[in-house]
Amino acid sequence: MFTILRNADRGEFTVEEKMKDKMLSAFMKHHYRHFNSAALIDAAEGYCTFLQNGGKMMVTLAGAMSTAELGLSFAEMIRRDLVHAVSCTGANLEEDLFNLVAHDHYLRIPHYRDLTPEDEVKLLDQHFNRVTDTCIPEAEAVRRLEDHMLKVWQDADRAGERYLPHEFFYQVIRSGVLEPFHQIDPKDSWLVAACEKNLPIIVPGWEDSTLGNIYASHCLRGHIKNVSTVRSGIEYMMMLADWYQAESPQTPIGFFQIGGGIAGDFPICVVPMLIQDMELADTRLWAYFCQISDSTTSYGSYSGAVPNEKITWGKLAVDTPRFIIESDATIVAPLIFTYVMETLQES
Image: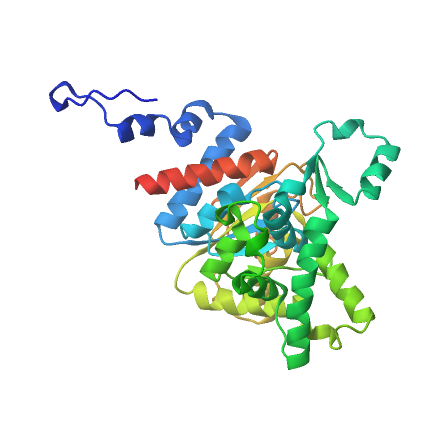
């Protein structure tokens, strides 16, 4: 606890001033001076400068960021209008809600590296699906959400309506049916925050997710008549193209990529598609780029490609601020988000 002696003549500090000295961003500025830690500071400072100059930021989520509970920091970034669009895998979309309604039933296994194949079978028999050190409970998470998703899918199917995957998630959240099952503060759900802001979300390859598989099973069993009730990835690219054309003439758009894979590769391609395939030569390139990746640097894989390679594909310009932080995103992303929030709160 702080002990405050209020005496302006003697220059005593207020509580707020003392707390300011304890902010995480001040710690990071002092200690993070070299190598990946310096790249982290550069990227965070670049994020702040970009927004201060009127830019808007797309954040892409690969890996299992939702199961890693990135919402603890990411949701607040969204609420503060420091994120303006999201691209994520279908797994990250659904796993944020899994955590929202089943958090108390998750199982953490700190020594997961020591598990034998037989141990894994025991987890399977208990209906736990393991993601590194965290097991998602099938009954409380997957099946609970399935019932509510099936209803909105079938309602749309009967009405002859079609929606993108994230729009169905927004319908379920806005209906309030999940509220009795909340096991975390909904303020820590990034998807709830995105829904409140009606944030555009791009979900390439949604079919490659648990609920995507479940949707296919209901189509096969005849519970859903029109397979295209859930709109496709091509339609996501068309939606993204419309959004980018509407926003980028007014403000530069930045690209903050967590991990690699389709969550990043799909949306970043909208710019060369507009320029090269739509022949819209005046389209702005992405105006900021950062990737957090623990992939070995390599020109043979997208996840390990350094940002310069994207210049040859018409995604980034020679003078685009670009950063790569080679580290664990579960450590780095919350640090950057906190740094950005603290810095912009001051300004």
